[in-house]
Image (cartoon, rainbow, N blue to C red; front, side, top):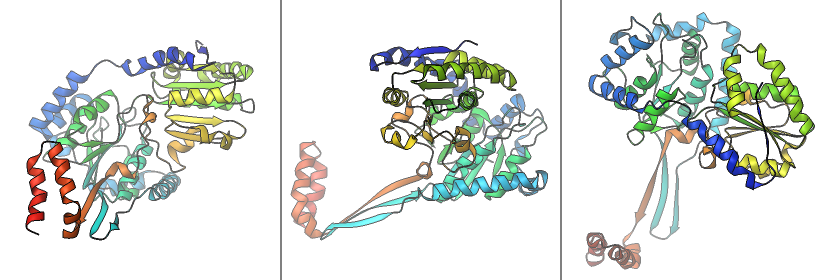
Length: 436
């Protein structure tokens, strides 16, 4: 099995690694012209265009009238899945809600000086649109995507939440998606996917309401549509292929490390799994484990391409240099698979999420623990954060000053305005000085 072995002995080695990794975001064909046409069609023709694209790619019999999922179908879905599965979904939802409740910010007001009141209103957007991918024709329901996007919006206080997801060929959605929506109390769902669903949420149609923020992962068509619509609607982030970077010491279990690398490699041929260690023997053992475990995976072909093209085993002289490389990679998922992860967490500067110790594999965060799994990719953790309650909020400043404040500071404000050549600004202030 081909897999890169690299050395990182100093920051001088970063240029070559960065050049290799930078090619990942160019791995997909340029679909922008196609997406622009889809956006234009949906904007002009609304539901008819959405239904037409859905018939072409997902469900041949779907009509515009069939886009909304009947509320009764959502309510009945809980009867169609095992009770034990519903219990697991409820427990995961409770964990996710508890974590995100801690993120909620309050509005505030302060009076820094007599006659001056300043503050900030933290307000939810009115309406959010959530994209839930179909998952292999609807047969692998992405329950976690709905949980991770809907719960922060609910905690933020968003009044109306609208879900879109591509239908199966028979014109239904997987009952697990509908059951999860029922557990969350969401009853507005539309059967459409890809770029046309994103366009419908951004522009609004006769059936699908226009939203203020769109969140949720998707393929290159979904991602491109979101990128093109920035400025017309809020989005969570521009997401790229999934990735994991692991920093391991000699106490790590090579079987576990290999399994963790494969957990990302199976996502996508462009996914990246990187193991960094000062223990050369550990790297060799992990390579053997990858070769042993890979053939047993249903998604072996995808994982194999990910490992051969975008993954690596990287030898470093010590953990300190390993952390330097991690911060340069700024990975989506970062596993600190060392004996004492708390001794190193203070050195983390750039990572979407950090998984601490040998017993915290990345899927724990993906599904159940509580933190959000919608994370920055392609090194954007240098400046971006996980999807959160803030994604669905906006902040409005409050300013209140009295006449004494104007008398004391008005001439300063006017002077700054005139320095910028804005005479009317200056006079707006001076009118209040002349005629208090």
